Amino acid sequence: MYYRDAVAAILVYDITDRDSFEKVQTWVEELRLYLDKDTPIAIAGNKYDLPNRNIDQDEAEDYAKSIKGAHFDTSAKTGKGIDEVFIEITRAVLDKQKNDSKSRAARKKNKKKSLKSQNAAFGVDGEDDDDMKLGEISSGGMY
Picture 1 (cartoon, helix red, strand yellow):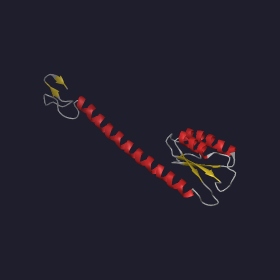
Picture 2 (cartoon, one colour):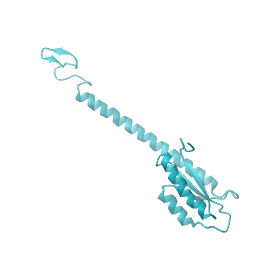
Picture 3 (cartoon, rainbow, N blue to C red):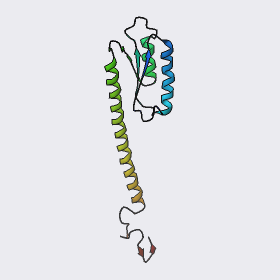
Picture 4 (tube, rainbow, N blue to C red):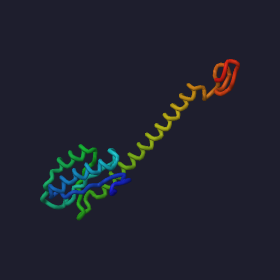
């Protein structure tokens, strides 16, 4: 219910708290149950301003890559990285919508081509060799 119609997700954890980082993995699993698999996800490691980091940046970035997401170090106190998170997640949403739109247009075009081919095969899209149309009666019977 909380995730319905979401076009993106930003998950925030505390870089000084291992448990909060591990909960991100649970949240990602839950999101994947309810959202499209290609929904953009950003992971924000917050409290970058504190000296006692317990989550290695490489570990966090590797995890983000493994889920096809992005990782950002942030600080709500100083504002570090906040703009970048929102800029990148917005860019990802717009790219996804653009790709989805192109995919829908291609499927629509292919569907029209397929229907046109089917109609032609059944003689609907034109006349047959005897200039008779489907449903007309000729001396040889009904077409």
